[in-house]
Image 1 (cartoon, chains in turn yellow, purple):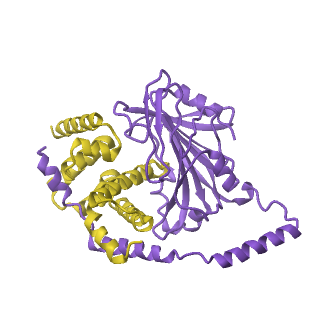
Image 2 (cartoon, chains in turn orange, green):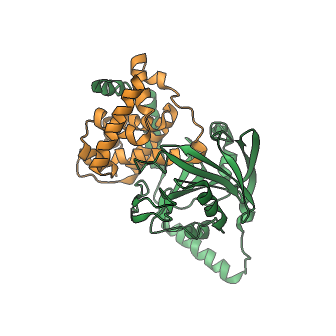
Image 3 (cartoon, chains in turn red, blue):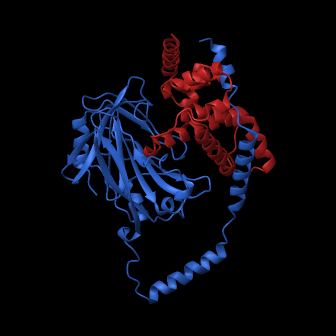
Length: 153
Length: 283
């Protein structure tokens, strides 16, 4: 069982990543915060041992994406206020616009784009994290980039 | 778009100090409230219960119908006409784990004594159902979602699946498209609990979708075998059915309420195939 101190250390190490992924999926500040809380509840309650910090990070990514998918899949969540609170997160129009373009991509492209460009993972690593083939991830990155280009025109 | 701009923009997304304080205190406090059970007291209570049951003939305590406390109404709009579906709040027992996976709907029925619609076309396997209770910030449960991501695989070819026991890990499926089924049809069953009604002030009901916009092309169909109206739409989506397939851009979604429980099916099949699925459903 983690001590409070150990838990806080882990929280501050990973919170922004979890929050960003949650926002990427949920497109809403309040719901991203709910996901953040649930993910760290799982980490604290789960008493799971990790082989390394990287192992822990990947577990958190996986849990966050699964939680978001399940929440989004709930039908009564279908009517949602997208981009609510975005102005709180990024005060400059330019940043807001980039974030909005990324999170407007279909889910399968946006998570691949996020993991590649923000977290710096390579295709093979993204494939391992998401449980997809490397070629599928390459395809998603390629199509995602194309869609972003078209969006910007 | 320059690629470094993506990273820079996302770095603006950070949790606030207020959020950090809230999350840390909620997680730590909630965890500390979960104390080890007092097994000796539980054992005495269980022994007393057995003793009472052996002496007194207690009738069946309750049926699922007795556990229905109140009803709610979902409103949908199909074109210009309003479609109302009555749902029930159920008083269900949450004494078991918060999230887990199950092999079949039959297991849920046994636990809750609540009959659910099942499809004879279904391909249930070990851990194919995930159980997900929705919870408010105050920790109250207001609904349960049961999800099977590949409930009906129809004529899909070379189907391979991988299920995990861990509730936070999604099940995976690999397949070749069939003639009728381009993807599996997934099933979600939503059960609202009495807690939702009790905690209504905590939840923004409009936000939660009480009056639900549905796609303009949603149409109502009558399903004779169930004697219900279902709503069906074709949706362009990157939703559940499309998440695992790069080539899916459109799916058929069907939803309805039956005996107070909401059912939701999605997959890349025709409207006719979806209606056939509905006609085959039975308790």
